[in-house]
Length: 173
Image 1 (cartoon, rainbow, N blue to C red):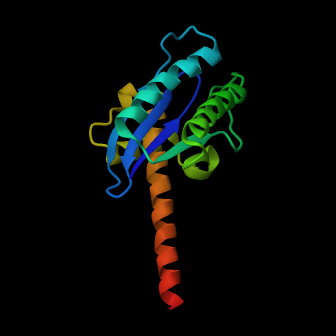
Image 2 (image 1 turned 120 degrees about the vertical axis):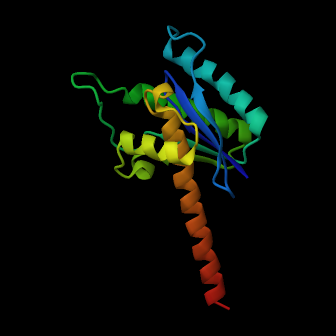
Image 3 (image 1 turned 180 degrees about the vertical axis):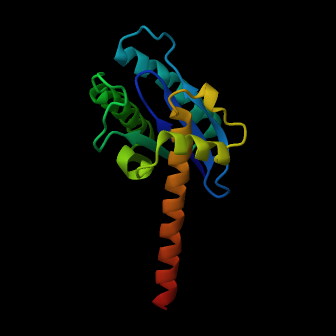
């Protein structure tokens, strides 16, 4: 089973395709708008073209979309937070996937839940461990790292749930 995890924004969307069983990252990268000076809506829609190509190539069974479902603060002093724009991008990607898959196996994952207080730097280091060849220099915002780590987090959660269910079934016999 393949998982496509996405860290969407209006300027770049990190993605990772991960094999559930082996937990190996098969591919990861960045989807960027075809033109950076486009309005927000057009930038996000242009990235959906790239996401469509990834879906056609890998045929994932599960889709994970990082969504701003918790508090988020800007990291740049004096800069207004981009939450409304980020929420628009994440919501657009999530809604598009829901429509494309009839709502099957599309998971909105709260940015607060899966990161659990881990710094961007810690997630970049983890991405390097999970994907040989990952180059942080080509991932300035750590969007690709976040997509890689989001999939790894989700797989760990699912496998823990599977073990618990198996132990529960075994204990009730």
